[in-house]
Length: 127
Image: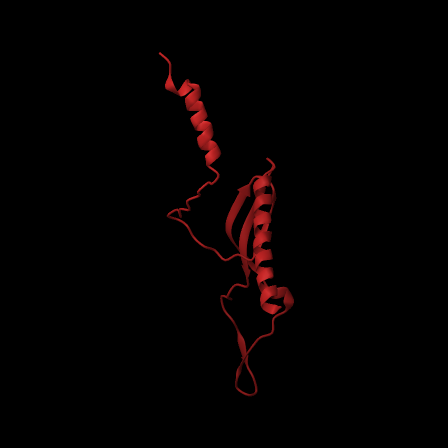
C-alpha cells in the first residue's frame, strides 16, 4: 500500500502552495506581564558566548531623602548650594536583553530606520 504523502502529485501540491504564499502574517500578543518602560540609556557588552548583552535604564537624579534650607535675610527659604561632587545620578535598570549579534544588527538597523523616518518628517515640516 502506497502512502499518499509520498506521491509526486502531493509533493507538487505542497511546492505549489509554498510558491503561492508570498506573505507571512505575524500576530502580536501581549503576555500578562507586559509593561512599557521609558528608557534613556543602555549599558552592556559581549557575553562569553558571543551574544550581545545590554541593560536598558532610566537615568535620573533621585529625590533626596531630606533637604536643608537656610533662611535668608529676606526671610525666604533658600536651598543650600551643593558641591558638584555631591551630585549623584541613578541609573534605574529596567530590563536586560541578550540577543545574537545578527539580531542586534537587525534591531540597530530597525531603530535607525525609525530615526530616519522621524528626521524626514521633521524636514518636511520645517521645509
